[in-house]
Image 1 (cartoon, rainbow, N blue to C red):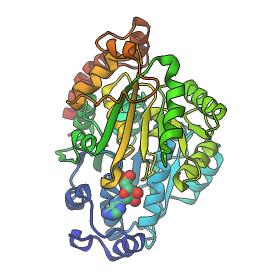
Image 2: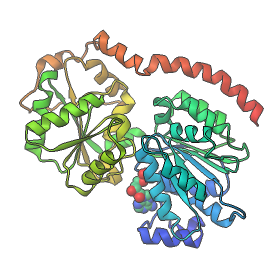
Image 3: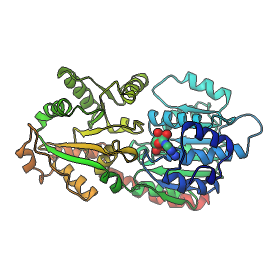
Image 4: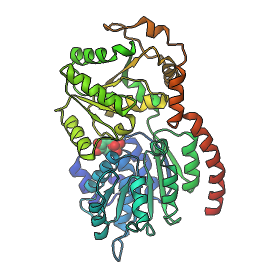
Length: 423
Ligand code: AMP
């Protein structure tokens, strides 16, 4: 199959040809024909599957076939959780729309609003935004969503995790109901299903690479280590294995900074990306990592979303995440595009419970690698233990499962009522 058989218009085919896309990825093959028909869509797909083109191409195609007469106004709104992802989506759109008279812009917080105001005043057709800044700018009267025909929510599960649900609902209220809506999410927890019921009309469902398949493509290993030895083990692995590109995960921003500092003391250059870093600093670090001039990037889960680096050789979980799905997201950063990747997880004396949750989710025991100098029988023996109370509480307070479940219950009732009214 090629893109021409998906009935995309010639200017799009020309730009795809230039970019070098020859064969549609499975999600593109599934999604594009349905979206061209005008259907709403609920897509279960991770970054790395080609989902950006899957939603952007049919929208651009529809816009090309039905050019707007009159002053430029926002016809497409794409919402996503992070600045990095928003920038990437916008970059992709600019590439795809190279031969079309379509202007897109990206909008996110943490940077001056002025340049964004200026672009808006000149007029844009497509707005790719994170919810917080968009809502601010709507409130200030800079953004008019009354002409929006296409709405895309990308990485909806992350947006919900980050607490954007209220903002999203407020934003949707500004958009005409007569629109085509698409919702993509890597996981489908009940809160997403509920949101989709509320915002999609008779959607087609597409689902690509169930997470277990992704997991299978990756060589995973587990190292039991005392918390105090994690730094030593990380340095050991990097010095021994000399991995080409390592993405190290830490649960907290503070943890990321500490790792970078400690690796520096051990003679290994590393940089961190997380929410407290400026946009410029994040882009610089990512750029170096992408080019291969930086071997080690340390990230929080939120910052790592949307890192479009295709050849990450190793993912190291310095801390185990307290939500098992996050482990799957993390290791999915390696082993992209069918290439094998290596994922190493450290498990200390306090993380046994998290490990059990992960192994239950992926339905396999991660092979233990005890052939390392910091192997701890003590940590291993505590695999069956519950996490200490302090950590459990911390998880909950940070928007853990207990809290969210309550929120979903309330949302469900509201959602059903709303949907009946809307349609
Ligand atoms: P995404 O899942 O949208 O982040 O895409 C992952 C990567 O695959 C990006 O670098 C895209 O440029 C690339 N890509 C998307 N579709 C195709 C395709 N049909 N052929 C080759 N590369 C693609």
